[in-house]
Image (cartoon, rainbow, N blue to C red; front, side, top):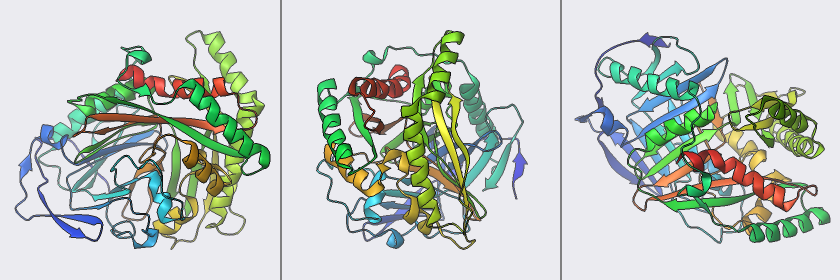
Amino acid sequence: MMRSYQNKSFVWPFHCRLKKAMNCICVRDDTDACLHSMSSMLNNSFCIALQNDEGIWATMAMGCHQVYVHAHNSESKLDELEGLADLEGYWTYRVLSYDLKDAIEKFPPHPLNTHSMPMVLTVRPSHVCKFRVDSDIDGFLILEGDFSAIAAECHQLMGQVRRAFTGTAYFPHHPDESALQPTMTRYAYKEALIEIQDHLQRGDIYEVNYCQEFIGHVDIENPFSQWLKLLQNTSAPFAAYMQHEEWVLICASPERFLQRKGQKLISQPIKGTARRSQDPQEDHRLRQALSQSPKDRSENIMIVDLVRNDLSRLALKDTVNVQELCGVYSFKTVHHLISTIEALIPADTSLVNILQATFPMGSMTGAPKISAIQIAQKLENFHRGWYSGSIGFVAPNGDFDFNVIIRSAIYHRPSQLLRCGVGGAITMASMADAEYEETLLKANAIRSTM
């Protein structure tokens, strides 16, 4: 049962001891856990994730009872990953790397394995609460833990997140002034698209999500403040911030991967993007043009068909339905086409079963999924890691909500390396210059903020 809470000062237990198990690190509480201040919290394990569910809500977690960290291992099998199938009956949050695909299907080793991001991070926090982001409803809902000593600071954080989400966008920098710079020239991008369209012409694939990366070295003292600025500039309904040990995820995702509510699964892929304009008439024209664009609608419908196929592997007979096809949704910097697909699944379907059938999400691969993954991996000049993976919370009853990690920056504190992946759907109708410009558009909010 959720309880409303309103008061007091902020200290919480975190010190943990490590126990190694195979390639997984399991972290458990010490009984003599130390108390830390709020500033210390933001330097340790902490997660906040937004969801659009009859309003915009944030689930916030801190502290740890258990943590499972799995390094990328091409020999891993999904149903053998400790922590992923465990911890039923508890609140957890999970970060699922795009590399998790290698525990589902066997792909050739990535030629550019240039990071050490965990393939799966599972945290069972000591404290979990929830609050409304897009309104001024007082208080927060306690989901797990004793908040009697930390309520005042949780209210302070709640106020910061609300003010950021509802604030006016402010871009202090031109994108070219950002620490994040592209790793691929326009010419190299065009050459890759020629090869992709050769595959399309031969019928190897119908669509592929091809990505490039922006990187930079920068000393970020307070990553959480950077996330708040990005939230202010995007109001992204599936934004998330996660900090664990040396890794920080600063995410402003507009896209839901998958939500479970009882026996219902809901997927909302995005395909189709247009810029916003400050001129209302021009902005309306851009929105209308997107809604009627044969190319963008075709890209979206192909992924809808893929998602329907993925869900049908789990669903009860005749329960996969497209609730909305190519709806136009406007965000602070872009318009998007979003579709909604729903299905009913047997009550005993596990998270592992669901991921086995649906991960990685079709909007970040293309169709057919396996062929598209192989071609993208061969041609992309970086290793995606967490980018185009997912982060979300799992409730004690098994319900969950996972986003798609896009419009995100991933920061490695020891090396001070900041990275940001962006991509888009490539079809036979794609024009290289337009596709390259779309990747710049998608990266602009992050590059102009940070």
